Amino acid sequence: MSDRNLVIVGGGFAGTKLAQCIEHRLPPDWRTTLISQENFITYNPLLPEVVGASILPGHVIAPHRQMTCCATVNMTQVTEIDVASRTVHYLGEGSGMLEYDELVLACGSNANLDIVKGMGNYALPLKTLGDALFLRNRVISRLEQAELQPNPVQRRWLMTFVIIGGGFSGVETAGELVDFLYSSLRFYPRIKPEDLRICLLHGTDRLLPELSASLGAFTLRKMVQRGVDVRLKARAVLVTDRAVHLDSGDIIEGGTVACTIGTASNPLIDQIPAPKVRGRLQVNADMSVPGVAGVWALGDCAAVPNARDNTVSPPTAQFADRQAKHLARNILAKLDGRPTQPFSYRPMGQLSAIGHNKAVAEIFGLKISGFI
Image (cartoon, rainbow, N blue to C red):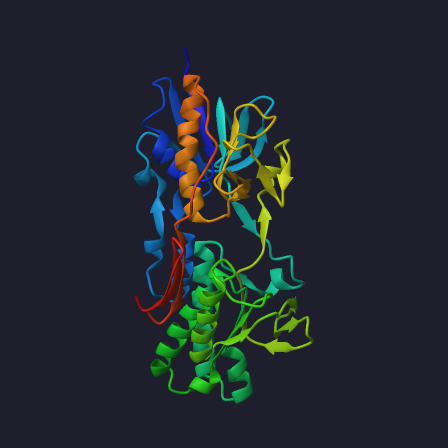
């Protein structure tokens, strides 16, 4: 009898953790294949620290082949999923096909820069390690250009950095830029502190809406104290090569625009004949895809219901990790003929670094802020 295949599409938090949890526990006639466009996992919450050069790029990635032992790792791009024939088609050095008995979709989401006109052409995303390195190199390039610029108006433009989005990534990126830029001034004597401008735009009335209002207010105070130009209820409607236009009519001129908002569904999700919720696959309580035999989904690409509070799980690493552990148990239960269980998890909390050795956190309801 030939081996049976469990195929995991996606090498992010969810897919990698699932491979780790299940590879040693499957029956002997089963094998696990992890398919990912990269041969490493990226710890995305640490990308702002790469931008600010607080940590080295190698510290935010880990090779899949070192994290798994028995799973087969294929670095390739999945082009098609045929649920009728239970095959996954991919394109690497050449085209290929892989049959599956059980398929897990953990392919995440993509950046969507089309939600604001011009953002796709002129704003820099922060979704991958490559994005973080590109943004960091842009910051260094602007410092070099400003050092040689005799015109104070043009120098101010070069030293203006606009960040769109006041969630975790936006706040952490702004904090890192403040630390990095001001600490770099001693190497650029022609650039004065008044030349620097970091502007953080957020569409709602408080920063970090994922946390409590008091922690959002604390973050706002600290950001303003450190010289960040925070604009709340400010929505970008147009990004050009020279400026960001707001819905209020204000225009913020700046040489670098970074975008931490906007997600789009992975194109592979559209190929699955199942209901979608805001671009995410609507799955059953046990993370199986309704109406599609042998297919499961978790992580950012799936709207996973949380039985603990009857809400949809947020697309965070914390939930992806717990979903992967739970799905491993459910897949093994199915193979053993046992009933699967609904996903239920009480989140531990959230944490955000805001620069200068400070952070805000809400852990099991306890609010923490400052140096500790």
